[in-house]
Amino acid sequence: MGIDPHFDLWRYLFTVNLVKRRVGKEDLHASVGCASIHLRSTQAGAYPLMRLTTSNKGWHSQWFYVKNDATAPLPAFTGRYILEAPESWGWGVQAKEKKHLNGLLAALRTLTERGVKGSGIIGAYHARRVAPLMARALPLY
Image 1 (cartoon, rainbow, N blue to C red):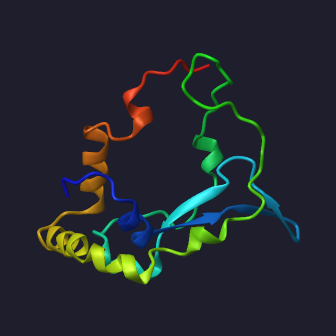
Image 2 (cartoon, rainbow, N blue to C red):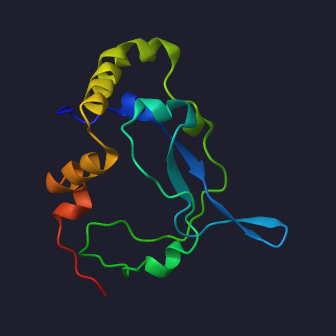
């Protein structure tokens, strides 16, 4: 859309959920990847079409680990678990803030009507090096 990141628009479209893993009949806290971001089901029509995975099963087989390194710009892994999702994760945008999003949502509709797909958005995101970690060269161990 050619705008700076807009947190209220993001909160309107997406939600964050706490991830737990089931062991037997018990839900345990996930030590890695403890939260997941999803497009809100009520907003599926507001976002350009994008085929998303419906399961993260087996994600760890495609993962790698980076050791704690004082020279790397990443925070050290502490092993701390998020035990409860903050209530605000599910709130979305408040009614009074939604009015300010009308123009942005109209722009998203226009882009979708002109054929913009989610894959194009992700491609532009990476091409412009918007992802902070993509712009850095980090040593891998």
